[in-house]
Amino acid sequence: MASTQPLPQTSAAMLPDATLDAGSIGARLDRLPATRSIWKYVVLLSLGFFFELYDLLYSGYIAPGLVKSGVLTVTTHGLFGTTGVASFIAALFAGLFIGTIACGFLADRFGRRAIFTWSLLWYTAANVVMAFQDTAGALNFWRFVVGLGLGVEMVTIGTYISELVPKRIRGRAFACEQAVGFSAVPVVAFLAYLLVPHSPLGLDGWRWVVLIGAHGAIFVWWIRRALPESPRWLAQQGRVEEADRVLRMLEAKVEAEYGRPLPLPAPAEPVAGHGGFKDMWVPPYRTRTLMLTIFNVFQTVGFYGFANWVPTLLIKQGITITTSLMYSSLIALAAPVGPLIGLLIADRFERKSVIVAMSGTAIVCGLLFSHSFAAWALVALGIGLTLANNIMSYSFHAYQAELFPTALRARAVGFVYSWSRFSAIFTSFAIAAVLKGFGTAGVFVFVAGAMAIVMAVIGFLGPRTKGLALERISR
Image (cartoon, rainbow, N blue to C red; front, side, top):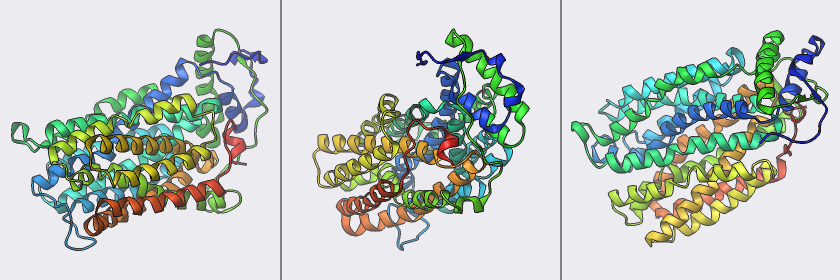
Protein backbone atom coordinates (compact mmCIF):
# COMPACT_ATOMS: atom_id res chain seq x y z
CA MET A 1 0.00 0.00 0.00
CA ALA A 2 3.02 2.29 0.05
CA SER A 3 3.13 5.27 -2.32
CA THR A 4 5.42 4.97 -5.34
CA GLN A 5 5.25 8.62 -6.52
CA PRO A 6 8.65 10.28 -7.13
CA LEU A 7 8.50 12.73 -4.24
CA PRO A 8 11.40 14.65 -2.65
CA GLN A 9 12.89 12.36 -0.06
CA THR A 10 14.79 12.54 3.21
CA SER A 11 15.92 10.18 5.91
CA ALA A 12 14.03 10.36 9.22
CA ALA A 13 17.27 11.34 10.92
CA MET A 14 17.78 14.38 8.65
CA LEU A 15 14.90 16.46 10.06
CA PRO A 16 16.32 19.35 12.13
CA ASP A 17 15.23 20.03 15.70
CA ALA A 18 14.06 23.50 14.60
CA THR A 19 11.01 21.87 13.02
CA LEU A 20 9.70 20.61 16.37
CA ASP A 21 6.17 21.92 16.86
CA ALA A 22 2.69 20.43 16.70
CA GLY A 23 2.21 21.43 13.07
CA SER A 24 5.42 19.76 11.90
CA ILE A 25 4.60 16.60 13.86
CA GLY A 26 1.30 16.33 11.99
CA ALA A 27 2.96 17.00 8.63
CA ARG A 28 5.57 14.31 9.29
CA LEU A 29 2.87 11.78 10.19
CA ASP A 30 0.83 12.58 7.09
CA ARG A 31 3.74 12.02 4.71
CA LEU A 32 4.45 8.47 5.96
CA PRO A 33 3.84 5.62 3.50
CA ALA A 34 1.23 3.15 4.73
CA THR A 35 3.59 0.27 5.52
CA ARG A 36 3.18 -2.76 7.77
CA SER A 37 3.89 -0.86 11.00
CA ILE A 38 1.14 1.69 10.31
CA TRP A 39 -1.40 -1.04 9.61
CA LYS A 40 -0.24 -3.00 12.65
CA TYR A 41 -1.30 -0.11 14.91
CA VAL A 42 -4.65 0.10 13.12
CA VAL A 43 -5.26 -3.63 13.60
CA LEU A 44 -4.31 -3.54 17.30
CA LEU A 45 -6.75 -0.71 17.95
CA SER A 46 -9.33 -2.55 15.89
CA LEU A 47 -9.00 -5.57 18.19
CA GLY A 48 -9.99 -3.30 21.07
CA PHE A 49 -12.99 -2.23 18.98
CA PHE A 50 -13.88 -5.93 18.42
CA PHE A 51 -14.39 -6.49 22.15
CA GLU A 52 -16.21 -3.19 22.40
CA LEU A 53 -18.73 -4.08 19.69
CA TYR A 54 -19.18 -7.57 21.09
CA ASP A 55 -20.30 -5.96 24.35
CA LEU A 56 -22.31 -3.24 22.67
CA LEU A 57 -24.30 -5.45 20.33
CA TYR A 58 -24.98 -8.64 22.27
CA SER A 59 -28.12 -7.04 23.79
CA GLY A 60 -30.42 -8.05 20.96
CA TYR A 61 -29.02 -11.56 20.71
CA ILE A 62 -29.33 -12.45 24.39
CA ALA A 63 -32.71 -10.71 24.78
CA PRO A 64 -34.74 -13.85 23.99
CA GLY A 65 -32.69 -15.72 26.63
CA LEU A 66 -33.29 -13.00 29.23
CA VAL A 67 -37.02 -13.29 28.55
CA LYS A 68 -36.93 -17.10 28.59
CA SER A 69 -35.13 -17.13 31.97
CA GLY A 70 -37.74 -14.78 33.45
CA VAL A 71 -35.33 -11.92 34.24
CA LEU A 72 -36.96 -9.58 31.68
CA THR A 73 -40.17 -9.34 29.65
CA VAL A 74 -40.56 -8.56 25.93
CA THR A 75 -42.72 -5.48 26.53
CA THR A 76 -43.47 -3.35 29.58
CA HIS A 77 -46.67 -2.24 31.29
CA GLY A 78 -45.71 1.43 30.92
CA LEU A 79 -43.58 3.37 28.42
CA PHE A 80 -40.59 3.55 30.77
CA GLY A 81 -41.03 0.27 32.61
CA THR A 82 -37.86 -1.22 34.08
CA THR A 83 -38.57 -4.93 33.66
CA GLY A 84 -38.56 -5.25 29.86
CA VAL A 85 -35.92 -5.72 27.18
CA ALA A 86 -36.20 -1.99 26.41
CA SER A 87 -35.00 -1.11 29.92
CA PHE A 88 -31.93 -3.36 29.51
CA ILE A 89 -31.03 -1.64 26.24
CA ALA A 90 -31.78 1.79 27.71
CA ALA A 91 -29.53 1.13 30.72
CA LEU A 92 -26.59 0.47 28.41
CA PHE A 93 -27.19 3.64 26.45
CA ALA A 94 -27.65 5.71 29.59
CA GLY A 95 -24.16 4.61 30.61
CA LEU A 96 -22.85 5.28 27.12
CA PHE A 97 -24.35 8.78 27.21
CA ILE A 98 -22.68 9.70 30.48
CA GLY A 99 -19.44 7.99 29.47
CA THR A 100 -19.19 9.98 26.24
CA ILE A 101 -20.55 13.39 27.27
CA ALA A 102 -19.02 13.60 30.77
CA CYS A 103 -15.85 11.52 30.36
CA GLY A 104 -14.86 12.02 26.73
CA PHE A 105 -12.37 14.70 27.83
CA LEU A 106 -10.30 12.08 29.69
CA ALA A 107 -8.45 11.05 26.53
CA ASP A 108 -7.66 14.72 25.84
CA ARG A 109 -6.30 15.14 29.35
CA PHE A 110 -4.55 11.84 30.13
CA GLY A 111 -3.70 10.54 26.67
CA ARG A 112 -5.15 8.14 24.14
CA ARG A 113 -3.10 5.12 25.23
CA ALA A 114 -3.92 5.19 28.95
CA ILE A 115 -7.65 5.75 28.53
CA PHE A 116 -7.87 3.09 25.80
CA THR A 117 -6.48 0.59 28.33
CA TRP A 118 -8.39 1.48 31.48
CA SER A 119 -11.80 1.90 29.87
CA LEU A 120 -11.50 -1.58 28.33
CA LEU A 121 -10.66 -3.09 31.72
CA TRP A 122 -13.56 -1.19 33.31
CA TYR A 123 -16.33 -2.53 31.11
CA THR A 124 -14.87 -6.05 31.04
CA ALA A 125 -14.97 -6.30 34.85
CA ALA A 126 -18.52 -4.89 34.93
CA ASN A 127 -19.67 -7.54 32.43
CA VAL A 128 -18.41 -10.34 34.65
CA VAL A 129 -20.45 -9.03 37.57
CA MET A 130 -23.52 -8.48 35.38
CA ALA A 131 -23.46 -12.07 34.11
CA PHE A 132 -24.40 -13.36 37.57
CA GLN A 133 -27.38 -11.07 38.26
CA ASP A 134 -30.88 -12.53 38.65
CA THR A 135 -33.14 -9.46 38.91
CA ALA A 136 -34.04 -6.82 36.33
CA GLY A 137 -32.86 -4.00 38.61
CA ALA A 138 -29.40 -5.46 39.22
CA LEU A 139 -29.04 -6.49 35.59
CA ASN A 140 -29.86 -2.97 34.39
CA PHE A 141 -27.54 -1.32 36.93
CA TRP A 142 -24.51 -3.33 35.84
CA ARG A 143 -25.39 -2.86 32.18
CA PHE A 144 -25.30 0.88 32.93
CA VAL A 145 -21.82 0.50 34.48
CA VAL A 146 -20.67 -1.40 31.39
CA GLY A 147 -21.95 1.49 29.28
CA LEU A 148 -19.78 4.03 31.13
CA GLY A 149 -16.60 2.24 30.08
CA LEU A 150 -17.82 1.56 26.55
CA GLY A 151 -18.67 5.23 26.06
CA VAL A 152 -15.16 6.37 26.93
CA GLU A 153 -13.61 3.60 24.82
CA MET A 154 -15.56 4.42 21.66
CA VAL A 155 -14.45 8.05 21.74
CA THR A 156 -10.83 7.13 22.45
CA ILE A 157 -10.38 4.52 19.70
CA GLY A 158 -11.70 6.78 16.95
CA THR A 159 -9.57 9.69 18.13
CA TYR A 160 -6.49 7.46 18.43
CA ILE A 161 -6.77 6.06 14.90
CA SER A 162 -7.42 9.42 13.25
CA GLU A 163 -4.24 10.85 14.81
CA LEU A 164 -1.89 7.92 14.14
CA VAL A 165 -2.49 7.26 10.44
CA PRO A 166 -1.49 9.35 7.40
CA LYS A 167 -4.26 11.41 5.79
CA ARG A 168 -4.29 9.27 2.63
CA ILE A 169 -5.58 6.19 4.44
CA ARG A 170 -7.83 7.62 7.18
CA GLY A 171 -10.95 6.26 5.52
CA ARG A 172 -9.44 2.81 4.99
CA ALA A 173 -8.08 2.78 8.54
CA PHE A 174 -11.58 3.34 9.92
CA ALA A 175 -12.94 0.73 7.51
CA CYS A 176 -10.36 -1.74 8.86
CA GLU A 177 -11.31 -0.85 12.44
CA GLN A 178 -14.98 -1.45 11.70
CA ALA A 179 -14.34 -4.64 9.69
CA VAL A 180 -12.43 -6.19 12.60
CA GLY A 181 -14.90 -4.77 15.10
CA PHE A 182 -18.03 -5.90 13.30
CA SER A 183 -16.67 -9.41 12.94
CA ALA A 184 -17.81 -9.59 16.56
CA VAL A 185 -21.42 -9.50 15.35
CA PRO A 186 -21.49 -12.92 13.65
CA VAL A 187 -19.43 -14.28 16.56
CA VAL A 188 -21.93 -13.13 19.17
CA ALA A 189 -24.89 -14.09 16.96
CA PHE A 190 -23.54 -17.62 16.45
CA LEU A 191 -22.73 -18.02 20.15
CA ALA A 192 -26.25 -16.85 20.99
CA TYR A 193 -27.68 -19.36 18.53
CA LEU A 194 -25.69 -22.17 20.17
CA LEU A 195 -26.06 -21.14 23.80
CA VAL A 196 -29.10 -18.94 24.48
CA PRO A 197 -31.77 -21.66 24.03
CA HIS A 198 -29.84 -23.95 26.43
CA SER A 199 -28.20 -23.96 29.89
CA PRO A 200 -24.72 -25.53 29.61
CA LEU A 201 -23.45 -26.78 33.00
CA GLY A 202 -26.64 -25.43 34.58
CA LEU A 203 -25.83 -21.80 33.70
CA ASP A 204 -28.23 -19.87 31.45
CA GLY A 205 -26.94 -19.61 27.91
CA TRP A 206 -27.15 -15.81 27.86
CA ARG A 207 -24.73 -15.68 30.82
CA TRP A 208 -22.19 -17.72 28.83
CA VAL A 209 -22.42 -15.26 25.94
CA VAL A 210 -21.62 -12.36 28.29
CA LEU A 211 -18.75 -14.17 30.05
CA ILE A 212 -17.11 -15.24 26.78
CA GLY A 213 -16.95 -11.59 25.72
CA ALA A 214 -15.29 -10.66 29.01
CA HIS A 215 -12.12 -12.43 27.87
CA GLY A 216 -11.08 -9.15 26.23
CA ALA A 217 -9.20 -8.28 29.41
CA ILE A 218 -6.70 -11.06 28.68
CA PHE A 219 -5.53 -9.23 25.55
CA VAL A 220 -5.63 -5.63 26.73
CA TRP A 221 -2.13 -5.42 28.23
CA TRP A 222 -0.59 -7.13 25.22
CA ILE A 223 -2.31 -4.66 22.88
CA ARG A 224 -1.29 -1.71 25.06
CA ARG A 225 2.40 -2.63 25.11
CA ALA A 226 2.61 -2.51 21.31
CA LEU A 227 0.91 0.88 20.89
CA PRO A 228 2.70 4.25 21.04
CA GLU A 229 1.04 7.35 22.42
CA SER A 230 -0.36 9.68 19.75
CA PRO A 231 2.47 12.03 18.67
CA ARG A 232 -0.15 14.64 17.78
CA TRP A 233 -1.54 14.54 21.33
CA LEU A 234 1.93 14.69 22.89
CA ALA A 235 2.86 17.71 20.77
CA GLN A 236 -0.40 19.48 21.58
CA GLN A 237 0.33 18.94 25.29
CA GLY A 238 3.68 20.70 24.88
CA ARG A 239 5.60 17.41 25.09
CA VAL A 240 7.12 18.04 21.68
CA GLU A 241 10.45 16.29 22.32
CA GLU A 242 8.62 13.15 23.48
CA ALA A 243 6.39 13.36 20.40
CA ASP A 244 9.52 13.63 18.28
CA ARG A 245 11.07 10.54 19.90
CA VAL A 246 7.92 8.47 19.32
CA LEU A 247 7.66 9.71 15.74
CA ARG A 248 11.34 9.11 14.95
CA MET A 249 10.96 5.52 16.13
CA LEU A 250 7.94 5.11 13.85
CA GLU A 251 9.70 6.83 10.95
CA ALA A 252 12.67 4.47 11.29
CA LYS A 253 10.40 1.41 11.16
CA VAL A 254 8.44 2.74 8.19
CA GLU A 255 11.59 3.74 6.33
CA ALA A 256 13.06 0.25 6.77
CA GLU A 257 9.86 -1.32 5.46
CA TYR A 258 9.54 1.23 2.66
CA GLY A 259 13.04 0.45 1.43
CA ARG A 260 13.96 4.03 0.50
CA PRO A 261 14.18 7.47 2.15
CA LEU A 262 10.86 8.93 3.29
CA PRO A 263 9.14 11.75 1.36
CA LEU A 264 9.67 15.28 2.66
CA PRO A 265 6.84 16.59 4.87
CA ALA A 266 4.46 19.17 3.42
CA PRO A 267 4.57 22.67 4.95
CA ALA A 268 3.25 22.53 8.51
CA GLU A 269 -0.31 23.69 9.15
CA PRO A 270 -0.99 25.97 12.15
CA VAL A 271 -2.27 24.08 15.20
CA ALA A 272 -4.36 25.48 18.05
CA GLY A 273 -2.52 25.17 21.36
CA HIS A 274 -5.51 24.57 23.62
CA GLY A 275 -9.15 23.57 23.51
CA GLY A 276 -12.11 23.49 25.87
CA PHE A 277 -15.87 23.09 25.79
CA LYS A 278 -16.44 26.70 24.72
CA ASP A 279 -14.20 26.21 21.68
CA MET A 280 -16.77 23.86 20.16
CA TRP A 281 -19.15 26.82 19.87
CA VAL A 282 -17.07 29.20 17.78
CA PRO A 283 -16.90 29.12 13.94
CA PRO A 284 -16.37 26.80 12.16
CA TYR A 285 -16.91 24.26 14.94
CA ARG A 286 -20.33 25.55 16.03
CA THR A 287 -21.99 24.42 12.80
CA ARG A 288 -20.15 21.11 12.88
CA THR A 289 -21.11 20.49 16.51
CA LEU A 290 -24.79 21.20 15.84
CA MET A 291 -24.78 19.16 12.61
CA LEU A 292 -23.20 16.11 14.26
CA THR A 293 -25.43 16.38 17.32
CA ILE A 294 -28.57 16.25 15.16
CA PHE A 295 -27.05 13.50 13.02
CA ASN A 296 -26.20 11.33 16.03
CA VAL A 297 -29.64 11.71 17.57
CA PHE A 298 -31.28 10.27 14.47
CA GLN A 299 -28.71 7.81 13.07
CA THR A 300 -29.08 5.81 16.27
CA VAL A 301 -32.73 5.15 15.49
CA GLY A 302 -31.77 3.52 12.22
CA PHE A 303 -28.68 1.64 13.35
CA TYR A 304 -29.65 0.29 16.75
CA GLY A 305 -33.35 0.18 15.89
CA PHE A 306 -32.48 -2.79 13.74
CA ALA A 307 -29.26 -4.19 15.28
CA ASN A 308 -30.65 -4.46 18.82
CA TRP A 309 -34.08 -5.70 17.79
CA VAL A 310 -33.53 -8.05 14.85
CA PRO A 311 -34.32 -11.34 16.68
CA THR A 312 -37.41 -9.79 18.29
CA LEU A 313 -38.56 -8.29 14.97
CA LEU A 314 -38.19 -11.66 13.29
CA ILE A 315 -40.27 -13.29 16.04
CA LYS A 316 -42.95 -10.63 15.42
CA GLN A 317 -42.89 -11.70 11.75
CA GLY A 318 -43.92 -15.20 12.86
CA ILE A 319 -40.49 -16.84 13.26
CA THR A 320 -39.79 -19.09 16.27
CA ILE A 321 -37.11 -18.11 18.81
CA THR A 322 -34.58 -20.74 17.65
CA THR A 323 -35.17 -19.99 13.96
CA SER A 324 -35.03 -16.23 14.56
CA LEU A 325 -31.61 -16.62 16.18
CA MET A 326 -30.45 -18.70 13.20
CA TYR A 327 -31.71 -16.04 10.73
CA SER A 328 -30.10 -13.34 12.89
CA SER A 329 -26.80 -15.22 12.67
CA LEU A 330 -27.03 -15.32 8.86
CA ILE A 331 -27.80 -11.58 8.74
CA ALA A 332 -24.96 -10.88 11.16
CA LEU A 333 -22.45 -12.49 8.77
CA ALA A 334 -22.83 -9.33 6.66
CA ALA A 335 -21.74 -7.04 9.50
CA PRO A 336 -17.99 -7.00 8.71
CA VAL A 337 -18.57 -7.12 4.92
CA GLY A 338 -19.62 -3.44 4.73
CA PRO A 339 -16.35 -2.19 6.23
CA LEU A 340 -14.40 -4.69 4.07
CA ILE A 341 -15.95 -3.00 1.05
CA GLY A 342 -14.74 0.23 2.64
CA LEU A 343 -11.14 -0.98 2.42
CA LEU A 344 -11.57 -0.65 -1.35
CA ILE A 345 -13.65 2.54 -1.60
CA ALA A 346 -13.28 4.50 1.65
CA ASP A 347 -10.72 7.05 0.40
CA ARG A 348 -12.17 7.31 -3.12
CA PHE A 349 -15.42 9.07 -2.20
CA GLU A 350 -16.36 11.95 0.06
CA ARG A 351 -17.46 10.56 3.41
CA LYS A 352 -20.52 12.81 3.59
CA SER A 353 -21.72 11.43 0.23
CA VAL A 354 -21.36 7.84 1.43
CA ILE A 355 -23.30 8.61 4.62
CA VAL A 356 -26.19 10.10 2.63
CA ALA A 357 -26.30 7.24 0.11
CA MET A 358 -26.24 4.50 2.76
CA SER A 359 -28.95 6.20 4.82
CA GLY A 360 -31.20 6.12 1.75
CA THR A 361 -30.40 2.45 1.17
CA ALA A 362 -31.30 1.64 4.77
CA ILE A 363 -34.70 3.31 4.32
CA VAL A 364 -35.52 1.18 1.27
CA CYS A 365 -34.35 -2.12 2.78
CA GLY A 366 -36.11 -1.47 6.08
CA LEU A 367 -39.49 -0.67 4.56
CA LEU A 368 -39.31 -3.76 2.34
CA PHE A 369 -38.29 -5.92 5.34
CA SER A 370 -41.40 -4.87 7.25
CA HIS A 371 -43.65 -6.22 4.47
CA SER A 372 -41.81 -9.50 3.91
CA PHE A 373 -42.56 -12.91 5.39
CA ALA A 374 -40.60 -15.32 3.21
CA ALA A 375 -37.41 -16.54 4.86
CA TRP A 376 -35.17 -15.69 1.88
CA ALA A 377 -36.57 -12.15 1.66
CA LEU A 378 -36.16 -11.47 5.39
CA VAL A 379 -32.55 -12.66 5.34
CA ALA A 380 -31.68 -10.85 2.07
CA LEU A 381 -33.19 -7.54 3.19
CA GLY A 382 -31.67 -7.91 6.65
CA ILE A 383 -28.28 -8.35 5.00
CA GLY A 384 -28.89 -5.27 2.81
CA LEU A 385 -29.86 -3.21 5.82
CA THR A 386 -26.84 -4.43 7.79
CA LEU A 387 -24.45 -3.60 4.93
CA ALA A 388 -25.90 -0.10 4.55
CA ASN A 389 -25.75 0.61 8.28
CA ASN A 390 -22.18 -0.63 8.65
CA ILE A 391 -20.83 1.25 5.64
CA MET A 392 -22.45 4.35 7.10
CA SER A 393 -20.92 3.49 10.50
CA TYR A 394 -17.26 3.43 9.44
CA SER A 395 -17.85 6.55 7.35
CA PHE A 396 -19.30 8.68 10.12
CA HIS A 397 -16.81 7.49 12.75
CA ALA A 398 -14.01 8.72 10.49
CA TYR A 399 -15.96 11.86 9.57
CA GLN A 400 -16.69 13.16 13.06
CA ALA A 401 -13.10 12.56 14.21
CA GLU A 402 -11.84 14.62 11.25
CA LEU A 403 -13.90 17.72 11.92
CA PHE A 404 -12.26 18.91 15.17
CA PRO A 405 -8.67 19.89 16.15
CA THR A 406 -6.40 17.68 18.25
CA ALA A 407 -6.75 19.91 21.33
CA LEU A 408 -10.45 19.14 21.67
CA ARG A 409 -10.96 16.12 19.39
CA ALA A 410 -11.86 13.56 22.08
CA ARG A 411 -13.97 16.08 24.02
CA ALA A 412 -15.87 17.24 20.93
CA VAL A 413 -16.37 13.75 19.50
CA GLY A 414 -17.51 12.60 22.93
CA PHE A 415 -20.03 15.43 23.13
CA VAL A 416 -21.61 14.99 19.69
CA TYR A 417 -21.49 11.19 19.87
CA SER A 418 -23.09 11.19 23.32
CA TRP A 419 -26.35 12.34 21.78
CA SER A 420 -26.59 9.08 19.86
CA ARG A 421 -26.48 7.35 23.23
CA PHE A 422 -29.04 9.73 24.71
CA SER A 423 -31.29 9.11 21.73
CA ALA A 424 -30.88 5.35 22.10
CA ILE A 425 -32.15 5.47 25.69
CA PHE A 426 -35.54 6.64 24.45
CA THR A 427 -35.38 4.91 21.07
CA SER A 428 -35.48 1.50 22.74
CA PHE A 429 -38.65 2.41 24.65
CA ALA A 430 -40.18 4.09 21.58
CA ILE A 431 -39.53 1.05 19.37
CA ALA A 432 -41.00 -1.26 22.02
CA ALA A 433 -44.13 0.92 22.11
CA VAL A 434 -44.38 1.18 18.30
CA LEU A 435 -43.81 -2.57 17.95
CA LYS A 436 -46.58 -3.26 20.43
CA GLY A 437 -49.04 -0.85 18.79
CA PHE A 438 -48.18 -0.94 15.09
CA GLY A 439 -46.06 -4.03 14.52
CA THR A 440 -42.91 -4.36 12.47
CA ALA A 441 -44.19 -2.04 9.72
CA GLY A 442 -44.64 0.77 12.23
CA VAL A 443 -41.07 0.30 13.51
CA PHE A 444 -39.59 0.73 10.05
CA VAL A 445 -41.70 3.77 9.20
CA PHE A 446 -40.33 5.30 12.41
CA VAL A 447 -36.79 4.34 11.36
CA ALA A 448 -37.25 5.71 7.81
CA GLY A 449 -38.25 9.14 9.12
CA ALA A 450 -35.12 9.31 11.27
CA MET A 451 -32.83 8.32 8.40
CA ALA A 452 -34.38 10.97 6.14
CA ILE A 453 -33.29 13.61 8.69
CA VAL A 454 -29.78 12.10 8.67
CA MET A 455 -29.63 12.48 4.88
CA ALA A 456 -30.73 16.11 5.03
CA VAL A 457 -28.44 17.34 7.82
CA ILE A 458 -25.24 15.74 6.46
CA GLY A 459 -26.08 16.50 2.85
CA PHE A 460 -26.69 20.23 3.41
CA LEU A 461 -24.30 21.06 6.28
CA GLY A 462 -21.41 18.59 6.07
CA PRO A 463 -18.00 19.92 4.91
CA ARG A 464 -15.72 17.94 2.60
CA THR A 465 -12.72 16.13 4.09
CA LYS A 466 -11.40 13.76 1.41
CA GLY A 467 -7.59 13.73 1.29
CA LEU A 468 -7.12 16.74 3.60
CA ALA A 469 -4.78 16.93 6.60
CA LEU A 470 -6.50 16.96 10.00
CA GLU A 471 -4.86 20.29 10.77
CA ARG A 472 -6.25 21.84 7.58
CA ILE A 473 -9.78 20.48 8.09
CA SER A 474 -9.85 21.92 11.61
CA ARG A 475 -8.82 25.43 10.58
